[in-house]
Image (cartoon, rainbow, N blue to C red):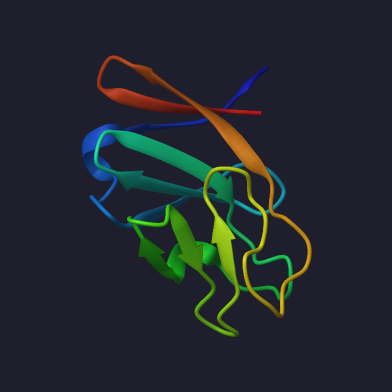
Length: 103
């Protein structure tokens, strides 16, 4: 397990997403209350950044803004069409004031 990215927790918007460099597609980091999740920042259906999509904090999902596919932030699986393939999910740990993203 290697560190891919590190970011201050305070820089991740509550109920929103932040794009970080790392991995083959960038990383989409989402903060919902005390929970932080990270997935690949590329919709598996089209070359679109998920970090620009809408987060649903109640469902713990993110929606691709271009075609409306919704992905689980827990396991990366698509929950609606047109996407049919999951996105990569990254591990998150908190190290003091920072969030660490690992593969």
